[in-house]
Amino acid sequence: MPGDESRIYNRAEALARLDGDEALFVEMAGMFIAECDTYCAALSDAMAAQDTAQLRREAHTVKSLLATFSFESGRLVAQQLEHLAAGGSLEGAEMLTRDLVAATRQLASALSAEG
Image (cartoon, rainbow, N blue to C red; front, side, top):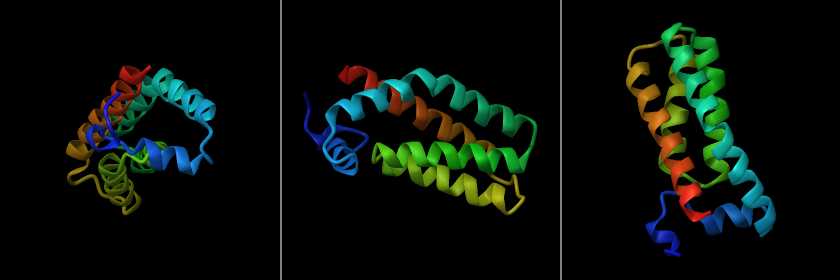
């Protein structure tokens, strides 16, 4: 298994956040993988509907999940989208939504690859 430096997320930090509970980490990773498509669809649907309130909520949810796994670059994208939508603006939101969907899928793929 590769070291943390080759991962898109920081497994050691995520485990520390969970008090070193490997079983809980595996369970949470499984839930994230299973729900990935739902998160991505909710983001995309909110963007398509140009619903800033819903987009803010979805970005906030995904931001929290990415933070749980210490996926900092993805968390930052989610944070940018959340703040943009919270301000009622959609300028640049389409690109951020696409980037956040891609980051969410990237994390799910990385977690799946580790089994």
